[in-house]
Amino acid sequence: MDLKEGMIGFSGGDKWIQKAIRFFIGSEFSHSFTTKNNDKGVLCALETSSTTVMFGPMSDKLNELNWVEMWDVIVPEDKKQASLAKMLPYIGKWYGYLSYIWFMYRWLMRKFGYEPKKMWWWCKGGLTCTELTQKYPKDFFPELFEGIDPNTIAPPELRKIMVANPDKFVYKGWYIYFPH
Image (cartoon, rainbow, N blue to C red; front, side):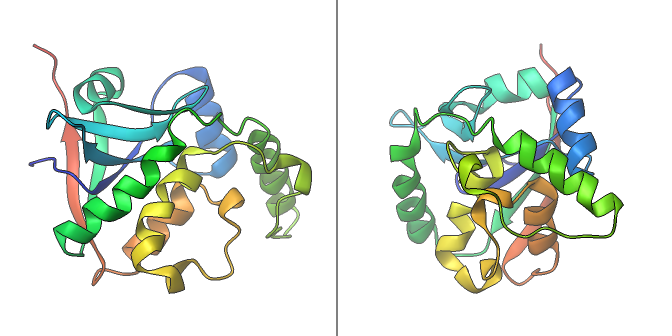
């Protein structure tokens, strides 16, 4: 598979924090990101790390994770680039650690049959990976995100939106990286 600018990726991982995230959000994926070329033409991942929003080479991401599920967004390339450029000012914004409390609370409430929809005001600092990633497709398809608090979206919710809209998103497959 050819990786290119404007794709959305989902990944997991075996670090303790990735396992914890996957447990509390009920998914095989703990992370999401978008791809964009840097000013030298190197394909990079625009994502949140463990501390801030970052923009680094995809080869580093793949070397760290070894596998990612990739999707393409069906819009003209010039529109993709314009939308991705609007995300660059988020680089350096801190990660939304307080959101972990929300995801644990939501997990617990779901065990009792209750589906909380809004995050408490005190958790709305920083960005989670999917909160950042959803900004990209929301630019083109805002109707798909109506009624969704962007602070509460996790990788499985974004992926469900994409799976349910094959006229807007194309599953490209798993990309597996084998370091040389």
